[in-house]
Amino acid sequence: MSNDTLQKISWFRDNQIAGTTIPERFTFPFYYDPHPLAKIAVAELQHYLETQTDLDHNFGLSPEKEGLVIGKMFGILVVQDAAGKLGYLSAFSGKLANSNEHPKFVPPVFDMLVENSFFLKEIEIISAVNDRITTICSNEDYQTSKEEFEKLSYQSEQEISSFKAQLKENKARRDQNRINNRSSLNKQDFDLAEAALIGESLFDKRQLRDLTNKWKPLLEEKQARLAQIEEEIELLKNERKERSAALQQQLFEQYSFLNKNGKRKSLQDIFRQTPFGKPPSAAGECATPKLLQFAFENGYKPIAMAEFWWGASPVSEIRKHKHFYPACTGKCKPILAHMLEGIPVDENPFLRNTDGIYDLEIVFEDDSLAVVNKPAGLRSVPGVDIEDSVYSRLKNIWKKTEPLMVHRLDMDTSGLLVIAKNQQAHKHLQRQFLQRTVSKRYRALLSKVIHQSEGEIDLPLSADFFNRPRQLVCFETGKKSVTKWKLIKRYKSTTKVDFWPLTGRTHQLRMHSAHELGLNAPIVGDDLYGTASERMCLHAASIEFTHPKTKEKISFQVEETF
Image (cartoon, rainbow, N blue to C red; front, side, top):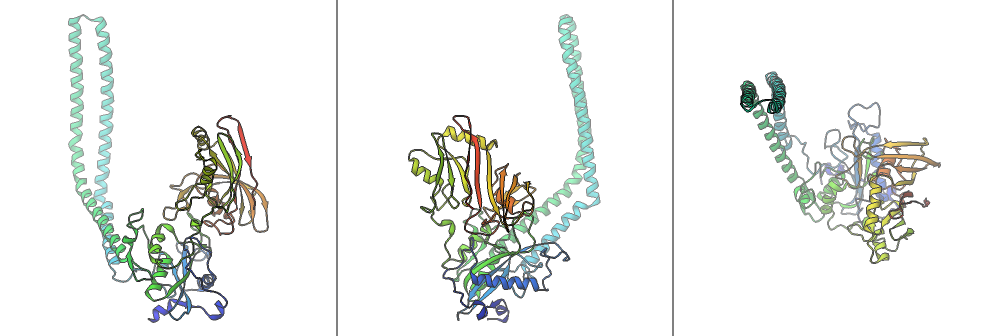
């Protein structure tokens, strides 16, 4: 094993890990509480990041630091060598300080930035094509010809449009003259007058044709000058597109991922059977695949993993400095399915059967609908692998009546849920939700002290396509999301608030709580946007709507248990 390889691993000291047992199974990467060994490794890596002076990268943690602020996801992999000695490997997602090569961190699966690589050579060619397009587009003669053609086109359109308006008036006048002539002239005089009107009409058409023919050669001449240049631009753009696609394909083949059995798979092979059909951008650049690749290449046994965010929070997503996060699903899940093949992994908590664990309280029921108090941890509807849900339980209770879900609550949210018992009631209730005439109040416990007493949060949300079900704040494509809130009680380190969602976006209250442009205080127990605990402290406490049959307003309240 080379010295460079040995430099990538940090060995634990005996006194660091005394009394710490090795886990029997590897960490489930998409939902985990870091193993004590992983926490020790993370603490050591974070100390290094705090004290190092070699990385020319602005994480946004120091106002004096210059350059673009880019926070980073870091990861560690606890490993064991053939002799049973324990240590850990470190990695970062993407590039750091615009480089892949750093002494403490494992290399990428494929280093596209290595000197004289095919990637850099092809990028140089693509850049030259880009420069050529830019040069042509900014050429003074081209710009002048383009402006002259646009000016001439506008003038011709205005003149022809104005003349057509005049012709329309002429036609209206002739039509009125015909009406008048029919009632005031004898047949001989009417025929003479009609011939004169037809002559006027033909004269107008000739004038319009002459005007169009006057502009046509002028426009064609200018357009011919442009066409030659624009054809060259289009050819260059096609060349750029083809080269970029070929380069992307070549990269996909170079990214070849190992598993413990020595089996390799390219990115293209891994993602071929996924809904994407092809690898998304930057797939394979995340920390955990890099770490596993290095471990398998050098004979280390993976023991546990953890990933954490280092730096300022990005504007779009919830990322808190030093907080742990799961591996991303869109880019990493297919890769890790291959890389962890044959390795015993912790149970996927999302597949844990909840039958008999949670009680479902029916708060109200009649012939039209039911209102239930859903416990945290129970799904509203069945999942892909888990049947137990509010829907399945009510179907079992009602036997012949199909539960019709009017709305849903997140699995980890408790509280009031409305279910229709027939199509007419379902349609009526759904219309109320769509028209936002249903009044809903949620109660939440936030993970820090909030000093304001009330307010309104307006942050547009969109789905994180490569990391579902997480949401992003996006001011360009996000859907409008508005929440009113009010303080209930402040505690030593938490705050209880009421929420009134004025829109119904996915994870709206969780995002508006956690995002730094919202309350900047994740809901206690929110495993997606904060820190996991026994339960997420979000409760649908109150709901008011119009009964679909009696047309009377009805309301229900259930107290939270946190």
